[in-house]
Length: 626
Ligand code: SF4
Image (cartoon, rainbow, N blue to C red; front, side):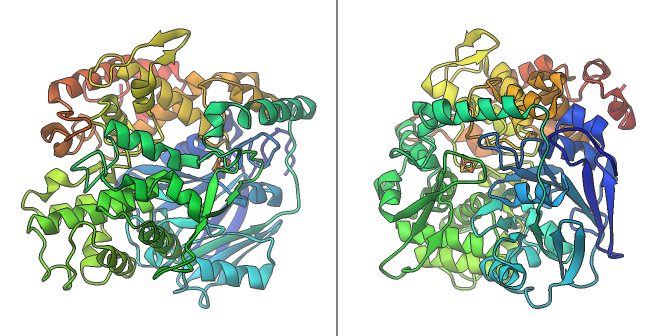
């Protein structure tokens, strides 16, 4: 296969697990020019590859794993690859990005990505060593946790093998099972691990010996070194996220979230935690052993922690993050940092999303305290808020789908539909995906961001809470004022951030790098690919968002789904954000404006005119948009 585009290998592996057939096919370069890679390209592939209405856990489901053109190059903070799949939590697409070294290694083996389809008759893992690509019997690692399975694969095939693997939760098709890479990095959210498990696929392991060609190596190296030296490790805003010079990583968020009142506490009943100081950055620092970086990243934001004394001595977490600590800590009223670390370790070991795990446990505790679940339902577990031992046991039960664990393994939307009795009102999710660690009542545009994020409640598709709390946002050259409690301007800020994030998540770049929209990343990409049009981040981002939306519409999503849990509309927060609530009128105002500015109709369907402008009108015609 001859190929001369830069930043890409031009090859995709297609693995049919039912037949065991493995083939190499050309990457669709016309789509790559329109969608770049990772998220965007994966969404386009699955729009074409998946029939409407398929069961995410059935054999007809597919997994796309894609790198971006920057992955594996010298471009700073660009180690990323993305798993794209129809989520068993939401029945719409999810694109889950992970870092580490796996993505670069896959490019060096000669592939931009993989498409996995069918279902293997027995447990297997995929072993990629350059041109040698094989399905191997996974009998000896099936049933093993992620750490043990990774150790065994490395023992068999070499320490330099890069491994991404599921644990018990994936094998048992827990709907929020994750896929863990290199002991610490996860394709965490929305159940990619369950899709692996349903296909009897335990792991993908890769070793590569090639390289990636880029269009303008001198310019790419010069710009990359400049950014590394001047921006990423000297800029105070970026420094916060590094492990250098006292940077605290994402855990630095805990202080302001608590001060402003948006730190989820007791299943979002409050936004401030009276024992925050026991689980904040100062405490995490005391147990941090080192900071680790992903491939090509000067920032090294992953805080590796270890508990060295007490009941949980020996517990370790490879990347201890704000989201996990908030959801497994304050959201469950747990203030023992060793217990929070233990819960996080269990999530990694069994392969489960920490955000959903904390959300689901918080909801179950809330139900228990209200008498909607009793000890009869919980196998004798007194599931009160703050019960450390119960939370630990619950996670074990969820991974194994034992007793109450089988109910909670379904995620909070399905579990609350089964429990009923009003528990749906405080089941904190959007479209089936659990709300992460920012209460939107404090800055109501965050509610719009959750409600309209393409895959359900994700905080990484727009983050207007920071602009609202810390002063303004820029759309084009003009500063836009955001008042946290007023609905004006949030729609246009969400849209701009949607486009920037979709673009960034399609390149291989990390969302902690180069924070300012439009800044330098397009130049890196042009130097990498040699395509001038790839710099148009607004248009490419908008095309990705609209394609995502068309997939969701085909699955029955409409305006009725672009909403929030009832608790955000009905229950005002206590101090420090006393009285903060989202009024239905303000929400409708934001949603109407969002649709209008997007060129969507009142039901949230892109118009044919908008799709024509983005060069994807044929996708609209396929689902009846005229
Ligand atoms: S900023 Fe952190 S997560 Fe992002 S690439 Fe660097 S080390 Fe990895």
